[in-house]
Length: 258
Image (cartoon, rainbow, N blue to C red):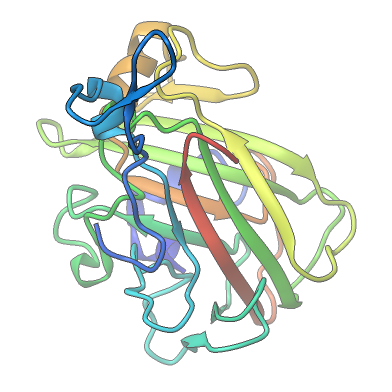
């Protein structure tokens, strides 16, 4: 997977080892006066002008925004299938790993390693300015490598420090435990709240050196997200690596709503 591609991710805390079909800026059709009437020449607020609300559906005409993937190994399948998604098209891929993760990374992340797979897309970058409150996706498991009852669905965010050429910040949110293999398409939405004045509840947030991140660090972190991953694992757990995972992802979303 992409995690195998980036050596730095061996230390993520595991015990083992704007284009697109639905891209838009969430701006109002018209501003309103105090009496409720509309005026077309009233200026938009800064938030309205920069807020991002985007979903990659992988339907016909998809620009494959983010180049989401499980691995860069050419021998592993990665294809947009026109039907069978939630609904219609979806992205299908295969990987052999202990920690299967759908991931996208910016060119800023670990320069010189797997650069051809990286994209400076709407899924990475300045979450604060873009007013991102939720990151979500629909996921399906077609075939399991090895399943253990201590797996979960984890959102993983990272940023890169150009000065030290190392991880700047690292954050995990375990949305749900998955003691059994999920069946069919399942929607997973995680609250990020990029403009929160404090580290939002439920997040495990650290600096690159492993020390706990502060509220002030969270604000800095939200201005530069360089890797986003949806993983079928939980941090600080070890998992066996056997077999091939066959997975699907659809309706990958960043925006103000889940």
